[in-house]
Image (cartoon, rainbow, N blue to C red; front, side, top):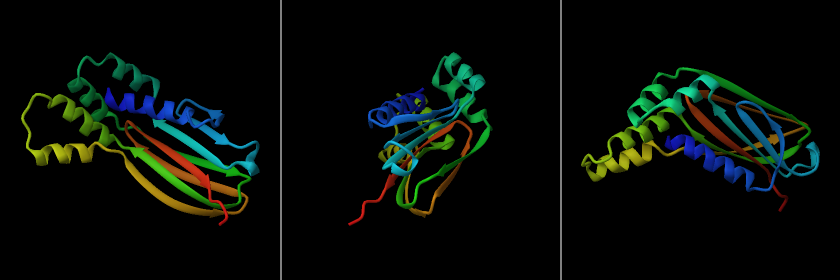
Length: 166
C-alpha cells in the first residue's frame, strides 16, 4: 500500500535527522536533538493511527480494491496529547499530516490505473492524495502541550524547532 510506503519513507527520513530516540510506543516515535529536556533544540514526533488488527488486514489484502475497502471501513479515531515539561521559549511547529481521505485518494488512483483520465482529473487526484502541511509558532514557559486527532488510518509527523535569537 502506497501510504504504508509513505510511512516507511517518513520513518527513514526521521531517523536520518540524527536525533536520538527518546520514546517509542505502539503508535508513536519521539526523537530529539540535544542532551536533556531544557537543552533540546529540536524534537520530532511520528504518530500513526493503526493497530495490530488493521495492520494484519492491510498485509493480507490482495489488491488496491481490497485495501480501499479496509481503509474506508476503518473508523478508529485516536487523540494524542504530547506534554513536554522543560522547554521554554519560542518554537516553530510543522505538522505533516496524511489523513484517511488522502490515503483513500491514493488507493482510488491506484485502482484507476489504465483508465484514461483528463488532465483535470489527474490534477485533482494528485492534490487530494497529498499530505497537509501546517506551520505554527508556539511560545511556552516550562511546558509544551500539543494535541492531534487522527481519524481512521492516518499518520502525522510533528517537527518542533526552537527559534534562534536574531
